[in-house]
Length: 140
Image (cartoon, rainbow, N blue to C red; front, side):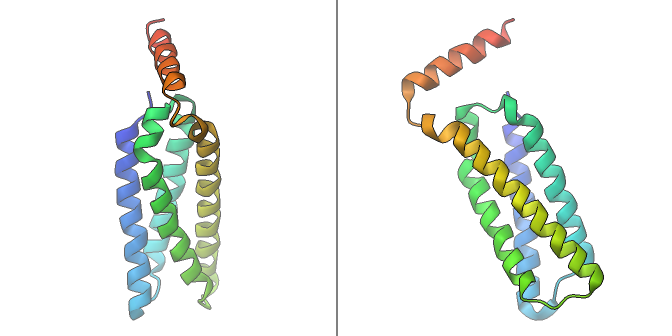
């Protein structure tokens, strides 16, 4: 079993932070370096949690947070697009590149998870079989 609740809570928290960053920047406040550094650290930690749980995620668990993860990635992508329009200084530029790397890593992770689970999401017989195998493995 993966830590679905932790993943969902992290998506909400980090997604809210990235959306707030985007709104503040669009509102004329510009990007705040400390906020971008913190966001990058959160994205990196989130990636490590989800990637570390990859082998334990079931079809049912992924279906609980896959749509949320897609919206989360869209929010980060919008922030990346906004950052691309800026002419930042050297320090901020480094954090923007880090934001792009984090986005790319999370995008690829979601693509991998989609390839693992989407073909089977509607297959009831396959899902029952997977549940039975998971239950069997837990009893070992």
